Structure formats: structure tokens, C-alpha cells
Length: 136
Image (cartoon, rainbow, N blue to C red):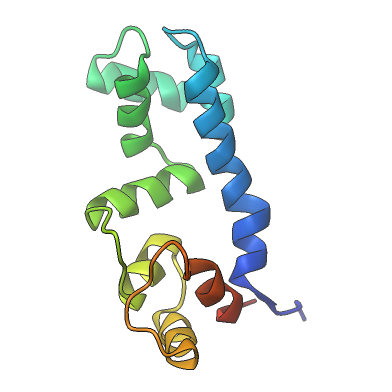
């Protein structure tokens, strides 16, 4: 049987480092970006990057093209980005929105918010909510 742990552990060990790496990558990379580097940073197969580039008629990858690739990507980090965009990147989130973005059980997030007595989630309280969300 697998051990239970909270989503904050997952978030801090698997999501935050990827987001930080993408941020540094975009701030330090010279443009146009090589598709191999995009594939590496987004954890995607190069063939899938090429397929997206062909579909979107991208010849050279600049920052806006990188974001378009993320909007069409299949990796976990791309899916998070897509769901965040889908709900409009609000300043505060409902428990349902957080559950949707991070693919968490809606009731786990709702219970975490109840325990913390919060109705809206900001980036400041998000780690507190994640700490209360148990995953298997």
C-alpha cells in the first residue's frame, strides 16, 4: 500500500522546481530557442514539439512561441499552464479552481479550505491549503 502525503510535498518537489527552471530558462536563453531545449525544459518529446510547431506554423521559437507551445503541450507542466489559462489566471481562486488546475480531489481541497476557514485561495495561502490536501 502506498504512503499518504500532502500535496505541498508534491508541489514543492515536482512543480515549483519546473516552474522556476522555465522562468530562468526564458530569462536567460538566447532567441530563437532551439526546439531540443524547449523539449527538455517542458519534458516533452522532440517529435511532439515539431508537430506543434508545424500545426502552429512556428519556424523559430521566441518567447510568445514558447508560450503557444506550452498551450498545446502534453506534459504535466503544460497541462497545469493550460488549466490556469482556462480559468483566467485570477488573483484569488476557489477550491474548485485549485482542484481543477492541479488535478486534485475537489472535496480534499474543499475540506482543506474549511479547516483553514478560508473561502478564497491566494498565492500566499496556497501552500497552507496544499499542506492539508492528502494524496495517495
